[in-house]
Length: 184
Image: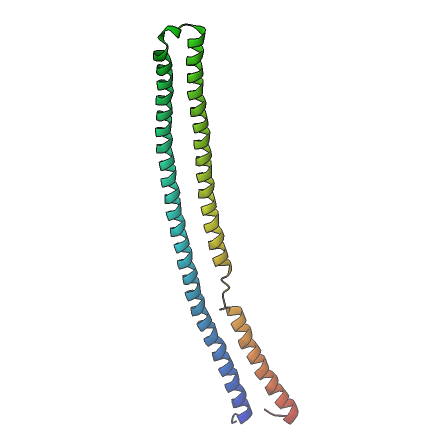
């Protein structure tokens, strides 16, 4: 029994639709690979920038620590000079109430200056810590947004449904032809 032209045409249509669906699937899959690779590359660049920013923050922290050490030494020197100056400017006042008060005031002024310096240093370190945390959070948010935008186009289920739909359409055409003419 020979295959009718209608059956051959329907089978050819089904085959072409199936090949088109499979071809689109593989093209989409390759595009997905490229897109995901680009996203990974961008995320890696974001991470490198974040690491460089952290290094800069660490260098700022080291610079602040060195400055703090030098400032504390300078304050101690100035306080000692003030106390020595007080002692040498009025040597007869040492041991008197006035002389002892001058020395206590000079010592207290130095202690206050060192205390304020420590507070400022702590504030600077907390600021650098917050900057470091913000850098990490900004990088995480950027990378999360990058990966969220990735929506794979290749879908084997969708491709299978397209092929099944093409097959069902071909079967419906054949059934309609059989009902109409009594033969396929």
